[in-house]
Image (cartoon, rainbow, N blue to C red; front, side, top):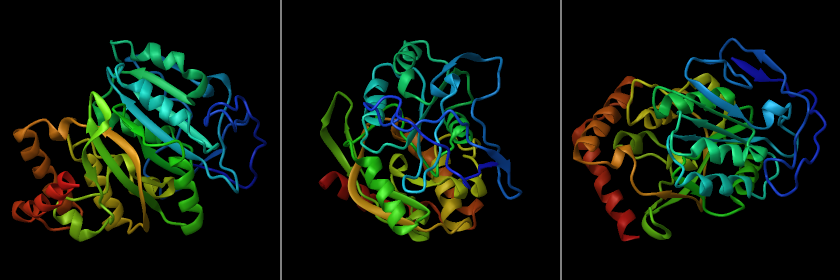
Length: 319
């Protein structure tokens, strides 16, 4: 794996004060070096591929981000495929954050609905975006992880948006104050046509073996983790179609024994839907993958234990 040298912070300048992603940029690319215990290689741009359509963003103009002693760099990754109807909300919620040292990566799976035109429209405030064929959502997320140069990294899908403008400032404050490996928070699941209409309030306040054993995990779009922990833990396992995010959290919790903090705020708004909520068969497959993810990582569970999460889901609806 290649990791950033942080002996000296390159001088940064403000490119455009309107956006969180352009307030601190540098003409000096992050210095990269290999470490023997890292599971994947970092890069500033993806290599050329046969499925490549387009790429763009600040990095293609020779502008980069670097961690600063008093302002850690946070990388937000969005993966998208034919998300033209929602991705503008996602992008704007990122670039309008108040926290100034933010890196934004967008990985598009080769959309044909106008998504790439939107990415071009906003590429002045996106660090790097690429449009090319991929092997599914987790393959796209893995591409994003290899492109991240932040101290802390998280995912914000193209159907999601930050709940308010201070989300990343809250996370940076928590990371600096606690030195936790990961921070996660609350999430509201909303009506796809009206993001003000809350359908469920997702509040998992712990990352524990017991909760994982019954299939309960922190909301993935709120989960931000030290890049060094991800480097040691490895990428998403694309052998999972629905629960690769769950499997990664099991791996980080059980294998890496990461430390964490819960931020008792709503940080992300998620439109209802998605692959894991697309019907009875999808739920059966999800539960099967959860059982496999636990057992593969040395955590025993079964279908009866997974049924214990139903009262928690009911509570989310009652809220």
